[in-house]
Image 1 (cartoon, one colour):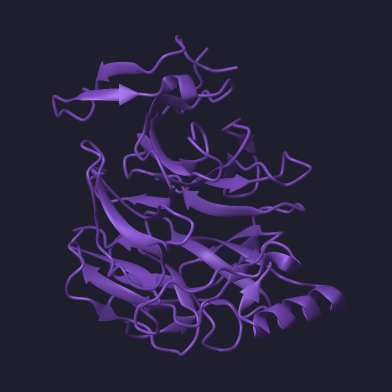
Image 2 (image 1 turned 90 degrees about the vertical axis):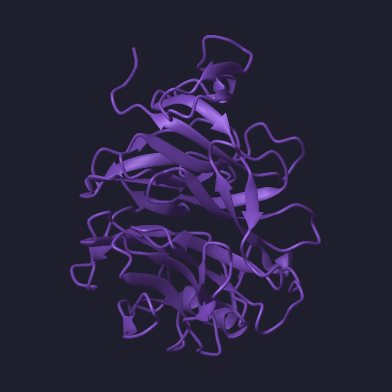
Amino acid sequence: MIYSSGLLALVLYFSNYGYGKTIEYSNYLIQKGEKHFKNLRQLTYSGENAEAYFNSDGGKLIFQAHDGDSLCDQIYIMDIYTKLKKMVSTGNGVTTCSFFQYPNDNAFIYASTHLSDVDCPPKPDYSRGYVWKLYEGYDIFKASLDGSNIERLTDTGGYDAEATFSFDGKKIIYTSLQNGDLDLWTMNHDGSEKLQLTNRLGYDGGAFFSYDGSKIVWRSYYPESKKEIADYNALLSENVIRPMALQLWIMNYDGTKKRQLTDNDSANFGPFFFPDGEKIIFSSNMHDKKGRDFDLYTINVDGTNLERITFFNGFDGFPMFSQDGKYLVFSSNRNQKKKGETNIFICEWIEKHRR
């Protein structure tokens, strides 16, 4: 079932952007129940494309992608209106987690292994189940928008990644193994004044500032039983983690007043604040007993008013709002040409439900 007036893609004039261009909408891909979506557009059409984030005026996206099983993710910047994209990372090693430096969009950050090894590293060993590889060569870099003027911001000899800017462009939050566990840290935009914000045994990552800079939201896994702790430490010693149960947390920008937002047996990740800071949008498999399907959800910052947003039988994740709250970008398996493809979609966000 679909939520659309027709079964074919609509080709309409996208007057909201004011570019005088003909824009192809894929509203037939809006599923029944996705009442917050309007004028859905598919921006990529092959490979694995994920973690796409807006620049300050909402006209560009930065994201990671690869097209081919033997290739590794690199960082790209795309013009939303033309869909033209350019690789802005070095093309060496593997990269992850890029983000524009607001408010002027004159630089971006990303994590990369290119200094430790120019080759694409081997894939994780999945014989023990689904795991994430914490490549030791990951460091965080800052570069100009064309990929030049690369500055190395971390140099700990271990995993430093998952970095995002505050929206005034002054602070960076990231995950680091600097003190032997996967904790959240902040630093200035130039890499100075590094400060540890979390210190509980377990994984803290995927953090974002609220638009006003007062709050931070992130995902976590904290082992509690002896078996869980032993398993976590054993995997961590091999630079691997098993992200099966992830909960969302919120804290103040300085690390104070930490509180748990979700409490279930599911994998909740990719949280992002609404522009007004009152709600969080995130991805979770809480509705699927097998844990395979991920959809988008929203929740108030006090943990109330959970609402399921997408109803696609597959993967929807990595959501981000434009600064004005009018548009949402996310990654999805919907309309994939072959199994395993993940593409980037953008839509107008309708806060009030359509009848």
